[in-house]
Length: 539
Length: 70
Image (cartoon, rainbow over all chains, first blue to last red; front, side):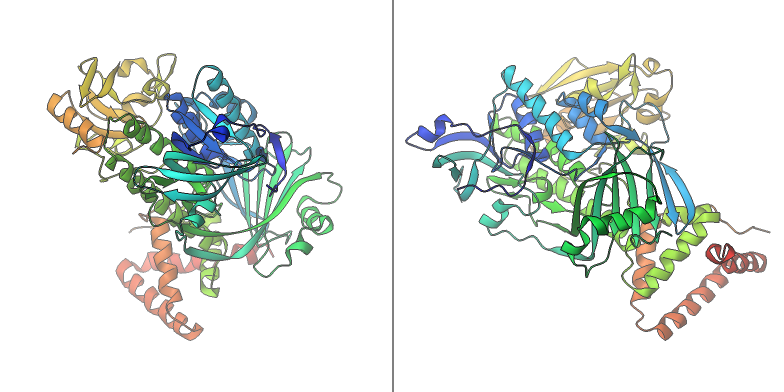
């Protein structure tokens, strides 16, 4: 019997019998993904669009209710754009760049997240998680119709796994009874409480933060601008801190910090939620409560993201506080990192060692996210009287003095990390702009009628900017194609500022996930071949 | 004579803030924290070394936005 653990917002993959259930021996699949959330489905898209057969198993038949993650970053949109799924997200989502910080009844300061032009996507959109997931699944359906070998199996609950040397056996329960399959690679995208982690007895320890947060999503017609408003110790006393954020469909996210020792059932009563909301919004403001929830959190990660033929991604591998929009966004960066590597290993174009770099790079990303998220949490919820004194001193000074504003931390909003100095990252033979140094994610820039990133696509690219380079280069079965551009194609000068600096031209080697491998002032065949080998874990 | 710098002048503000809080939290009780604060202020004042700047800083620190508006 499979019980629902939550109710659904969209029933998108109802149970259907698969031929595997009638096979005598376990059918073997190249990739099986546990968990049909945003990370699992995005990874299925990444692999399926490469032509790699992938099976997604989920114990429900669709997307759970509740807005949950709402802030999707520019990098996430750029990744989804590569999958062909960003359009509907951008259409429905609400773009924002401005944040305001308040203390008590005073505005402390405001900040702009993307104070420069020349990017295809905004710094962030706000979109309820179920819609984000639905647009990914819509894209899966479209890709399937075009022949992408993706299977989504609803009400398929994995009850046991048995790792072998070169595959993993999975015991699955369905409404029509159990069956067994084998996976060359098993990817755990099964969320913060990952059953797969539990089945393998893998630990997940970290710092527990002793505070609870009450989320209320409310529907109201209001004149608040599309900005992120954060109050420290708000005058309306509805929480020790409060966040107000707009979502599509006239829905607003309100997030109250309510303390550690709370009676959850009591706090979740509608009258009590309304008491907090009314104090904040004032009398006579009409609204409906669409969804409410109380959450607590930890900052933690698995020691290793790869265990032989089993890999973990997203919340299953690492967890942060919500301050900074680093949960779902970092999960999508995991997918971006793992997709091409798994594809190359499965096709025999790179050694398995390439998958160890997935752990190396994404654990580095997780550590950075945990550090930022922990610092934001310490600032928002001071743990000692003296840290409270300092926090409020910073807020007091920040009203009049610019120097104190960089110290105000209501969440450092997610930007992708750079893989500086890690195994796959090559040399900087250009000494160009810091933001495009080897290891960095490529910043977007205008290019002709469009933008640079869509032209990079999802394979290895030799980006030649006002420089010579051959049309393709193949090294040990891996081909990099040239994208030849000129700084003149961007009259705004952003392309030159972001990729050339003072140099007249440059040659970049870019990975399929649009991170810079290495760069030079001009084409150097030997150096480029070495960098390509290095980026495939062959050096 | 230099004026009091009130524009951002600290590299790695988040890292500095975390170290600052850690150092204070390591002091124990209130008396220890007050003594630590005093030593820290005196060290930094000597490093600044400019009487006028220190007087400006003392005046700025004496302002309190919360109280100013009642």
